[in-house]
Image: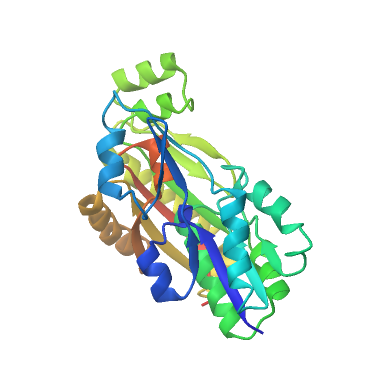
Length: 290
């Protein structure tokens, strides 16, 4: 059985990397001053941040069109028996619901599996890599889909932002809270525990924020994921927004503190970056089957 693995670009998988891995990535639209651009197609990370940091420019994110999803699946099914589509968590986007509606069409029913496994960015990428590994093991589309759903809550993300400006612009903070936070120079740590983006801690220095994130991940490994951790089934990732040098330093700190190798460092997808802005750092852990 031939299985095609598909993600949206919220996964952080570039078009070049997708080609190398043998997967398909549907680009997520960014809306800049009313004009639509596609991540990693006609909009680079550099171009995006240039616009994002310009207060005279309006930047937002959207979701792939139902037409693009259907067209992608249709083409893949010409040479594959099943399609596994792993989009961004339904708690952060409507992409899942749109995809599920398209997948109900008789053309795709029983052939396309839309996975709402509550992942985003690097944990979403991890799910794609696991799906690839399972397909190579000879698993069916349903078996891969079932495994991805069964392990959906076995991941954890912590993010610290450099400024509250973009959380305010995106409606994640009220202007009053953002003003107080900016005055106090807070570097908030946010968390994603399988779904929504929530506040976790309010440190004032990036050094303290990094320590809080490392402690939080270690606690997750030692408690929630202890059995998987002991079995060597957990992996660690680092991500950032226009902050690669600090991300590399954070990687070394994380590996020393946690005693685990960081699998990779990735820039966060543009649809996430629009809400948190440049200068952020993030760390995550997730179950792995590879």
